[in-house]
Image (cartoon, rainbow, N blue to C red; front, top):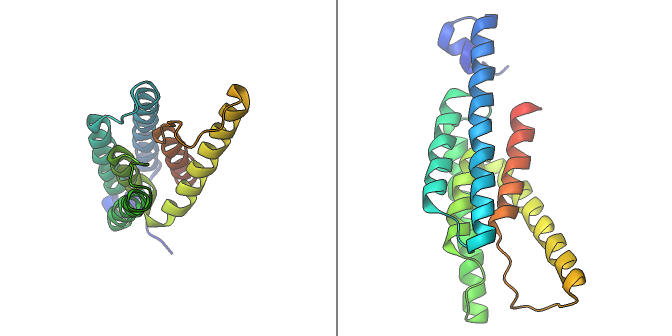
Length: 174
């Protein structure tokens, strides 16, 4: 049976400690979602994810791993390394094959920071959600504009944010 951090910290699982843990998790998640929304809007408008938002996401992700029951800190760090590595490899392979950039480093850093919130086991589902959402958005835009072009820019950050948020919130609150 898994011992919660609240029980390890206090030696007992009293209601006040549990309430404090829930309030801490809820506060972190509100800030988490706010950062995701801000960065997504910024990416849509400027085609860049701000490093400051990524640093805030990463820092709060590590804090969350240490003070809540959702992930162990090692799972969070492995999630960051795995998420960043997968997108960096994708970026590298694409640029070697096509001789152009298809995925920015901001997306790589963003997914690494998000990996701190979802752990290694959330990387696959988050990436799948992000990819499907991005393809649907691209398809709908192509239908609306009646233009299907491989060179059309589509910021991937909002879709990564959606995937990260979906997986994290399911892990935290289910």
